[in-house]
Amino acid sequence: MTALLALVATIMPAQAAPVPTTPSAPTPPAGSAPAYLHGFQQPQQLCPGGQLVGKVSDAIVDPTVAVAGGRGECTLADMKAANPGTTFYAYMNLGAMSERSSENGAFQRTCADPKSDGRQFGVRPGNSRVATNSMGLATYPGWNYSTISNLSNAYADVCATAAAKLLEAPSLPGRVTKAGPAKFDGVFFDDVAMTAGHGQDMDYVGKWGPWADDNAYARRATAVIDSVNRQLDNRLKRDVPLAVNLGIYPEKPSNVARANELARTGAVDFAMREFSTQDRNGSPLSNAYLQKSADVNRQLTAAGMPILHHDYAVSKRAVGTSGYDQGKTINGGAQCLKAGNGAVSRAADIRRERDYRMLLGQTLLTRDSGARGVKSVIPQVENCQDQIARNTGLAEKVTDRSVNPNAAGVRDLREAVNNGVYGTGARSTSNQVLVRKLSNNRYVLVNPTNTHRSVALNGKSWGVPGRSAALAG
Image 1: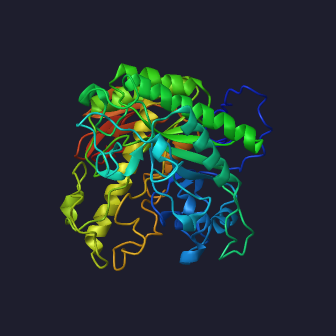
Image 2: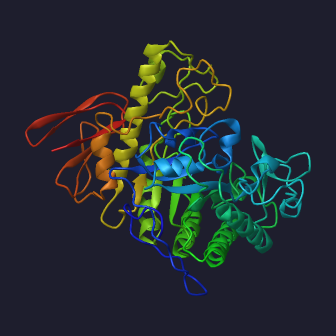
Image 3: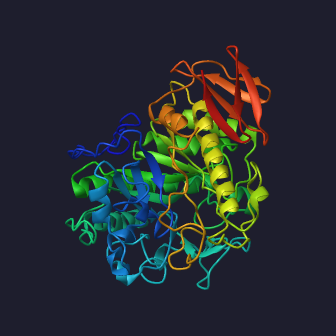
């Protein structure tokens, strides 16, 4: 496997032909972690002087950073020069198509354009409960610019061609470092789901599109990923890093079975799972869900597909300091926080750090010797911060990191996750805090409640903030 070499075991994809020679992968910086830098400008945190320089092992970024010099920012060439140990993945969407932008050249997020060459891959649902656009083609509810693809063999070929074109194209030269043009290392496909999804699962709305059921949809998604992986390796004559954003309901056995089939193809270097401990506005997921999700992660890593836990950091909004108490849902309709609101901004920072600790602690709590491939992504904000030109006067710049990975209470958990520490003892509960002994002879303490709690361990008392985690011993 080309990506995550310092983090997880190598998984080579199955090939119909001999595997092309794999060039040496970047050596990740010590103590670094993956990052999903959502939006158009958040990757600027990896520019020279940026707050995440040298702290990211694998960066998932918008492909337009390769040509962003026209907007005055640093380019992919600058980012790679400043982060020589980072593997850069270009974001693309597999499950849905969107319009191309001519100014981006080869660096497109879509496999095809639904208004031109991609129309043939669109889906006429034949079911009134499925969202459609003005062309009568199925879309994701609330995202009518995302036209769902039929996941046909021809679509797989088009995706492989688009991805290969992107990976082979040189970026603009560095604007800051004056580095020569650079290329992406791999590709990250969004919306690789085990159901037709986004609330339109056939289990809920009935049959639609060309698939017999959700199982058939999932098998087509797997077939497309497997085909694209093989084609990229053979076209580029190297083992191309390929990762996915995996959509799965852990409570559905059929979903889990299909995800295991995807894992066994060997096509995926790692699968990111969004909303690992909370939803996009910070609403906590239930303990029962977390346990089911952990069981699924064990299966998928055992089948050869490393998993990345991912939660978005909560946005900074005008909700008052108490609005950022642990476990509270942040009002996504509230105004983005303006500069000068220091108390609210700090309350949001504390909430973000504790949420990250919860994510890291949950990873350690549920990881055993057979699931060391479960890692955690450095959380980033999904909205407010990731706006291109509309963030004037906001509390944080788009280039500011959302969470300090070296904050007190964060760093030791993050390093334990990145260094392959795993659980060796049975889970127990003390004062409603979940406790497990780890392979480094320490203990992880995960507090799923919203209030600060203390745990007596080996003759000493250990405090854990609400919806957070800590290491003890």
